[in-house]
Every structure is written in structure tokens, then in C-alpha cells.
Image (cartoon, rainbow, N blue to C red):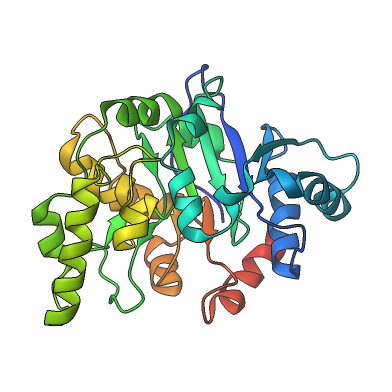
Length: 291
């Protein structure tokens, strides 16, 4: 049954739920994710992050899925920011994105392959973390609760707006030479040489520092924004607080879902990739039917 064990929230917690939607064509599992978000998180402002050129079509498509009386607002951004995964990663590193939500204490990124099982959002806002999301494992990583790749899968993640704005304003160097050495372990000699050249170009252009548009880590090295916030940033900015594994898995589950759910012994707040990874639809469907 649902239950995070999170403490009561402070009165000032004012979260917003942000659902990125790049196109109006919605597959059946995406429609279900939307319906659940609008039903379970209806007590909070719901915002559709969408490309400007498709904003009207997306609003119409969502209204058809969740019902014409459902309340939501739009956050249209220039079309290129929603045109690819790399562009979206850049958007999540832009100070202007978080400034847009300055009236809120936290923002919950809720992608279309995510779902929650109960409205525990205010309770999670009461926890001391600036960033929390499911533990992240690579496609070939074995399950080890002590060694996830990092904490904070971005597709279902809670972000303290003021902390993100402060970190972006500090503009720390978040990908150093020692980070590159760790990143290239196991690569072929040719691959290492190519990536070293890419890292050098990124570093010389200022692209290894935190804020976009200068940040080029996704473009040059394939480093996504959730890894930057969940792993790279805490190593250089000690004031930025990322949840530990035991808290993160109560918040959400991504890969190794069966093992993590069995170890947890109860539902987390939410699940990411509930229908996009092999075996996940069969695992999560019975729980979705109960919540």
C-alpha cells in the first residue's frame, strides 16, 4: 500500500506539477499517465510544458484525455527546446526555466512514462532535499542498493526551486578531468580519444559549467541533466542536498523495479518507466488498478 514515511510538510510548501508533452499524439499508456496525474495530483497546480507551435493542439489533446473540466495551464517554450532529448536536457539546465516557477517552493517533473500511487507530494516537500528522484541504474548495471549510478532519475523528480536557482547562479564547474576519467572507464582506446577531444572542446567553450545555454555536456558527452544534478553537482557544491538511496527508493522506482519493490515492502510515491522497460507494464499494472 502507498506510504513514504515522509514527515509533515511546512506550511510554505507550494509545489507545482510540470508535465512535459512534446507532441499532441498521445499513446494509450501516456494517456493513462495523464489521467492518473490529473486524478491523484489534482490538489496542486498542473502545468503542461510544451512547444509553442503545438501548444493549442496539445491543450486540446490533453483536455480530450482528462476531461474538458480539468484545470491546467500551459508553459510554452520555443519549439527547439522540445525537439529532442538533448534539447530538453539543455532546457532543464536553463535559469529561465526555474525562474518561471519562482512562485512555487518545489516543482515535480512528471514525464509521460511516470505515475504516482497517491498524493504524498506535500509530505515530500517537507523533506530536507533539494533534489530527489528514483535511484538510477544503467541498462547493464546489476542491482545494488549501495551503488546506483546516481540518485535522481529526472523523469519523476522533485526539485526545490530556490536551490536550483542558487546552484545555476553559482555556475560551478560540474565536469572536471577526474570526472572524465571515471566516465571513460571501459571504453576502447579510440573511444577514449574521441571523448577526450569532445571534453576538451566542451571545457574550452565553457560547456562544463552548470547553466545552459553555455553548458554543452549533453551535446558533447551525452551527460543528461539528471546525472548533472544527481551526481556531478553535489560533488562540487556541498550545499546542494540530494536524497540518499533509502529516501530516494521510497520516493520512486525506475530500473530493477521488482527487486526494489520487494526490498521496499510497500509502494513508493511513484514509478518511472512503468510501461517503457521490459516487464514493467506487467509488474505495475496490478498496482495501478488498485490506486
